[in-house]
Image (cartoon, rainbow over all chains, first blue to last red; front, top):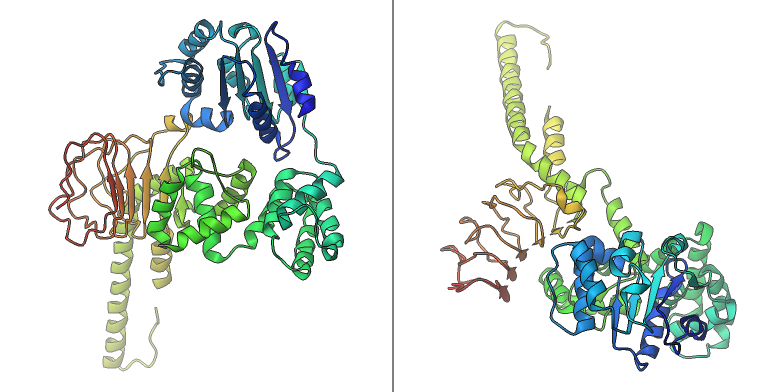
Length: 375
Length: 126
């Protein structure tokens, strides 16, 4: 973090700096940005704004929505209705030109997002700092962000510390576990997210259970993080799995109370226990705003598992959430009236064939045929 | 012959669906989703139906009796389908709609815990 602060040159009052933080998913970019943000709150900025999940939010609500959050937070006004992205851009340029702000754009994946939210250094007042986190280093270069910082995987020593902290909730582990801890660390390949999820999954488990988990991790080729996360999912009870998938597919970002209410209608009071277990295993998190959040790699994992349930016939799944599946099912339901008439026809034919059968049997007996043709 | 009928019945089944969540992103929303009046006719196991941002002009005339959670933003009618008995309904949220009442079928067994309907003036719950 000290390195990032150096890149930031907070003390300097001239000019506006854009700083890019890049690195792979689950390596801790957002966590770092959050820590920097928290450490800078006390500094002398006119206003601060942390835009979370730019990628997801701009997909869902549009860039205008994010622009209006930015403007209203900086100016301390209620949300402004923007009619277009262009209007948003000119409004940011005009209203924020004299403000010294600290702006964090978290998880950006498209140049359009940068152009709409922080198109140039001249948009903001002198001394402003804009921090951008992304998985795509190229994106920063395209936007001419030259000050960049790469978040790397943890080295073995730090990884071991993090794992110990998550698995034992203290700094030092029982000596019996040292061997198995070292083995697990190699499977997480220094990714804090993986270490956290593995550690939480093995919290309070015996050395034997640790060893059996290591065998599972060992089987994963190329140490793919999604597969590593999946081991924690497999360790859940049946109903916990179902609740986890419900949240991953449908209710991420919903208010925690709301999720409890909705799923409570399905699973009664066990619901509280289930969400508790999921939080303990670091699969879900309740944010400061009391919404249910999960890391997008964990979300991806859940959604992939759900898709596998009935890959070709979405109508046979338990949950429908993917627009293309919903469209398919709804279209399909419309033609099902045709199916119904087909079924009627089939039933009619079936009963006809039975009648013919009976006639043949009777006529066979009547005419004393010894053999009749069977249908 | 019988297996053919059975195959047909199974093929068309959407009765496994328990949760349906329409919360599309902006780019996806351009695709038209057409609700038929009878869309939910065959989903007889549907428990949670959430429609946050898909506009529909037609109003469904059937909801499965299994429905426990109904959230439908801009619900296009002022009442639920007349043949729907909301006995199992626990949560009913119909924000920004002209929804007025549960109709004559709402029995005294209604187990509703939460009802929200921002722009509704009066909701007659028995």
